[in-house]
Image 1: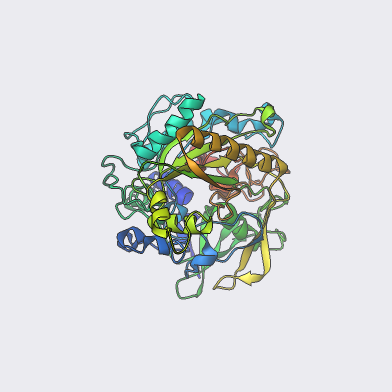
Image 2: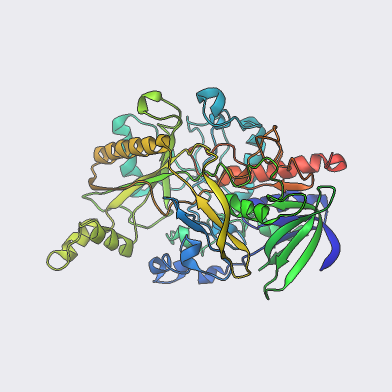
Length: 533
């Protein structure tokens, strides 16, 4: 048991915890981060071996239930058509993300005002804009300035090349007169901040052995540690403790040997993602907070948003890039803003990707009866190999209190801590948006010359984006934290991850998560003299 309190204790070393630690380091406070995972060794990433595709179904699966690493915790998501994807390590899920790196649009912060759904955020795009820029400098964002879908924004690295796949898909959008633009990517296309450029190892979603993809273990964390932040790995937090004055006093956690420890802290910051954060808060029960710390609103764990995904791929007559190159190439936000003639409110982004690996191609062809067993097997496979390309639609998920993260009554992790239970239902709006996105993507692929178009909607294993379960707001009855991330109930408790999101937008959230973390940290620094008032 440690009676020596640190100034700031951060739970979680992923996208948000890393950014917050880096920002707060310049205060010279004593900052400690507890991460239940460990440092990853890039030389052991799947992209260094020939079995990289098979490991996607094993120790590098996006599903913690399938991976079963000692650093993972189980998730009961049997009552959801979309299953949780995450990774527990220094760098968190940025180890496995694709590096697709969009910003929110200004409209995403005002959906109640504009479209009468969800709620408006207590902040706007202009509030976050300088923090987007700050995060982008350290991350190293590859992109092309001038995208008409966004306000002007600076890009720091040359864009990822379109490649054969990107050019082919762009031709389809051009024929239809629809928006497309080179994707913003968290991939170094030239050497940046000590990291070398992308060399097309291809298995981006299995960890980047080259170090070109900007996972936060190689972007924010080296700078934060050099500035004096202490990062302890294999430390799984069970609960945040609280005193009679409704102030957090520290955390109880299990170390690598399974021994219970206590770390006292003046400030506690939670950065465990939209499922892990409510899990910690709900497990932190006391006389003061019988329903979990910071949960007097009853909203901790409610309003879970995923982003329903649809996959739309086709095969082409001519060879394309196959799986070679960074996964991202172009995006389209033609259908991003609300048009009620489409049968839904809000919208989505098309994230256009290159093809699939040789094993994935074969499995796709067999399962969809495009590749027969026996006679004609090899010929049919060659018709698909290096000839597939397509996109996913990232559909905005509206907040609903019935979509929840609670604690499972029976399932526990290896330290005996109750596991999270997810209950989630696709809304009629999401189902209509998914169908519309599949139909329009099919038109794009056909216009580009694709045949044998294959779709999956929603993608069952597509729960990459975990948002909304500890939302920010100015009304303590309708939100968990205030407009700069501080708990309404516990004045020295802060949240910095995707749990804060009021709405989900129609884009990947990591860039906004990191901007929010920097914004919360900067707000704290500006208020150090009266932080708990």
